[in-house]
Image (tube, rainbow, N blue to C red; front, top):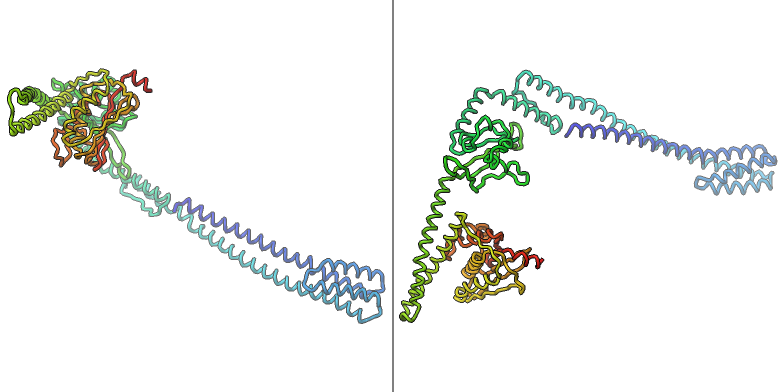
Amino acid sequence: MKIKSKLILGIGFLFAMIMLLTALSTIYINKLSADTKNILAANYNSLHHSRQMILALNSGISNNLAQKTFRENLARQQLNITEEGEGEITNQLATDFNLLLQSPADTSIYRAVQKDITDVMFINMQAILRKSEVAQKTADSSILWITVTGTICLLMAFTMLFNLPGNIANPIKELSRSIREIAGQNYSQRVHFEQHNEFGQLAASFNTMAEKLEEYKASNLEKLMVQKKRIETLINNMNDPVIGLDESNQILFMNDNALKIAGISAENAIGSKAQDVAMQNDLIRTLVQELFDEQKPAQGHISTPITIYANNKESYFEKDIIPIKIIPTGEKNEKQIGNVILLKNVTPYKELDFAKTNFIATVSHELKTPIASIKMSLQLLENKKIGTLNAEQTYLMESIKEDAGRLLKITGELLNMTQIESGSIQMNILPFDAREIIDYSVNANKAAAEDKQIKLLITVPANLPMLMADQDKSSWVLTNLISNAIRYSYENSEVEITVVHENGMLKFSVIDAGQGIAPQYVHKIFDRYFRIPGTKKEGTGLGLSISKEFIEAQGGEITVKSDFGGGSTFSFTLHQLAAEAGNKS
């Protein structure tokens, strides 16, 4: 328990007991006072009136003054009836007194009056005795409770007197002794207070301080310098550029490769603020800008390569910001003490990627010519003017035609992807009627839909506006989405194509009732070359990735919603023609 809580509890309890003692004393004193007043105000007055009546009776009832005194005291007694039976006796006294006035010589009446007065006195004497006993009990009870309460208060006071000073003084004495040991460089000294109070917290802080001092004492400056040199050598021998910053973004170190690609000297960089160096160096500004963006926290690995002229050529580096966090000695909370910026040279991988892209583009381009020639030959073979084919020849021709179409689609996808990867994708943004790409895409997939007896349902508004987009690439995307929907839908099902207005955009949606996409694969569906594991459908895994690139290059967005086992909805948006968008708003 906290020392403060102990003091509040002890003094508060003592104060409460004193208040209780005061309250009990007041109550019992008032009760004794009330009992005493009851005796004096009622019974004592009755005895006084009865005594005056006896004196008047003994003075001779024939005396007018005696009669007057008797009547006055009798009247007062009649107004002071307090005990049971006292009223009847007083009334009888009044009756007998009136009879005595009529027959003063009748001794029997005289004795009756005396007896009545004696009875009144007797009743009040008994009442005085009874009330005295009650008052005595009240006094005894008050003495008992006041004594008990006072004793408890006394015990509490003695307990606090003997325990409280020691509880406060002894830990302070122990802490003072330990501080003297620390002052004498005995850093192994520890304070052990098991109490969960202020002294326990103070002991924990003291022990943390002593532990840090012991750690600092145990460390050897020469060893620290050797370790520092070793770390600096390791960093300088790293092939990747490395920059170290402290918690205030002051540059602690830059290895030779980092200094070389930044084109600055160690004297101008190390020990300076990163923001100051960034003012004069574009590369440093690019590397540290995330650290000063309050709206956007510093990222870790950044996969988008940074282009830097290094090693006499254009090189590519991936940036990785590594926060340095430690738990200080004796503490529990983690603390960030700086950041390390690591640049990984990915130039060889980039060059291989470029070579791959060029190879795919060349092969795809070269394949398109023979594939087109094959398709032209197939068209000639289909012409009955050249000759009639038998059933087996027709089957073979259809198989060749199907394979040629699939090869042509694959080469087209590969060419599109090489354009995207090389950054040479060309957009021809012009206004056109949205119905044109809908009609084109539906007609392109009509044969495939009829083969599986799938109905293509088209839902578009009557006042469909003009689009401002690349018609060929938008048609390619919609055609690809409808083709996928047909491919993954069950036979005799439906595929719905809808178009709606949405914030100055047209939103195209293709809805199927197929198997759907498992939740763990939905976020990967637009990745290049990704195909859902276990799928038996053919494809390169490039169609959706190309669709995403085409739509985003036009300022739109492509999304997917899928109910695994209940179908999928692929949607993309394109800009309306500005005038059309304004009219709709």
